[in-house]
Structure formats: structure tokens, C-alpha cells
Amino acid sequence: MPSEPETSPLAGIGDEAAPDLAGQLDAVRELGWNLLELRTLDGVPVAELPEEGFARAADRIGEAGVEVVAVAAKIGDWSRPVTGDFAVDLAELDVLARRCARLGTRMVRIMSFPSGGTAEPEWGRIARARVRELARRAEDAGLLLVHENCAGWAGDDADRALALVAEADSPALRLLFDTGNGVAHGYDAPALLAPLVEYVAHVHVKDAVAVPGGETAYVSPGEGEAGVEECLRILEGHGYRGALSIEPHLHLRPHLRASEADPGRGDRAAFVEYGRATEALVRRVRNEGALR
Image 1: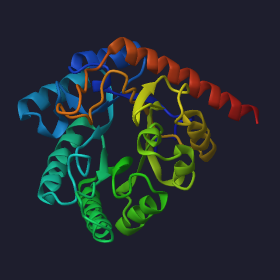
Image 2: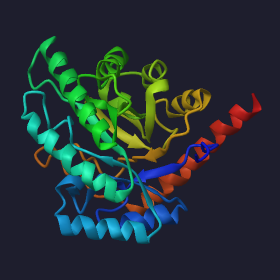
Image 3: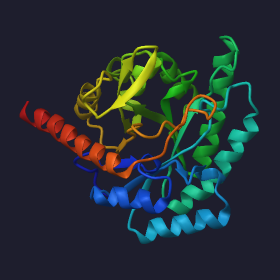
Image 4: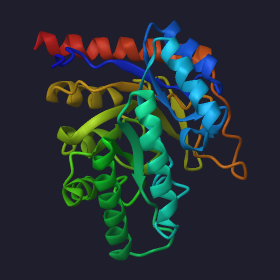
């Protein structure tokens, strides 16, 4: 069996660097990394790419010597309320089961379905049942679903996230922790992470500050109000060795709809600068831990 890595490898969500695959690959290689998290290519989610286009992309990633650490799905995200047709999410999972096998990755990011106006306890009952079914199918397909602390029933509450994992009762469901989502969603990220850390299988590195008008601005890691450094200390202290995947949001806000604001496009230079800042922050946290 392969040995566990001594440190967490660094990765990046590619469309934060460039819309096109060539730009995404160039950005991670410029950083000297070989891990890419796929969300969209030319603005199209992985599950929605035409078959021929996906096959070409998979070949190109392999030829570049880059590994796909995870795929970000739309399953249960801000665009898929619990009132929507669950068949859409199941169909996406079926597509991603095939495509992840081709990409050589098991990990798929999901969320837990916004309420769509459905009140508790019905919202929670439906969301948990859906995630349980998704986990059952993922287990059969050899996938690992990672639920992000973002949109949905369990997005901002540790007890709900733990209930989601417990009710699914499957090794195919774990958690993705995004260090920066607390600022936008109104919670303390390190406090949320502490009771969840043993279930975290993937991490997004993001930082942010609250600005007047209830808006959120995104900044370099460690320079904002999200508690990124404390989150990294919690992860390091628990022995987390999964990937740390940067999601700068400096030039791309994928959750924004055209009617709300321009979501923007990736920026390679800013992505690389963010990656360097993340390397420095991670190195400092690890060095502090080694000195204790």
C-alpha cells in the first residue's frame, strides 16, 4: 500500500486561473504543482461537457502529467433547491461516476440542497434522504462524495453536518471544508471546523472580509477575517493529509448569476500569486507545529 504523505499536497480549482484547460494546466505547472480540481472548462461544468470534448480534456490532462484531485459537481448546490427534481442530481452523479473513472479520481464535491422555501423539519428530512441515496450510489460506483460547508441544509451548522454523515452511514460520504465560506455565510469557520475535522477529506483555501452593505470581498489567504490560519492549525493538529485546494475568488465568483453581477473570469497571474501566498502560510503553520 502507498504510504500516507507527510504533508498535505497543494492543488487549485482550475477555472479560478483560466476558463480553458490549457490555461488551467499552465497555472498549476507554473506553481510546480501537479494537482488540479476541475469545476468548469470554458464555463461548462464537467458533467455537462460533450463526450468528445470531455475525452479530449481527459487525454490532455493525462499527457500533461497532472492529476485530478476532485471534481466540483452541481449536485445539491445553490442552483438545486430541495424542491427541485432529484432525478437531475442522480443523472449528474451517473455521468460523473464514468468521468471520474476516466480522470482517475474518486472525489466529487456536493452540497445539501437549499430549502427552496421548504420549512423544517421537512427540508432536513428530504435533504438527508437525498444525500443518503447519493452516498449509497456513490459507494457502489467507487466514488467519495465530499459535502461542502456552503449551500444547503448542512452548510453552516456542525450538528447538521454530523447528522448528514451519520444518517448516510457510508464511507462514500465525508466533508469538504472551505476556510472562507464563514464570512459570506455568517459563521466562525474555525469554530465550525473543530467538531468536524475528523470527517474532513478535502479542503478549499479561501479568505474574505465583510464589507459595507452586507457584501463579501475576497483577499489573499491569511489577510482576511475567515480565520484561515487557525483552520490550518486545526487541520495540522489533527493530522489532516488530504489536499489543500486554493479557491481565490479574486476574479471569479461562480455562484453569481448574470442577473446579479458579472461572475468574472479566472486570472492566471493572481492565481499563481495566491498559490505562493498559500505555500508560505502553510509552511509557517507547519513550522510552528514542528517547534511545539
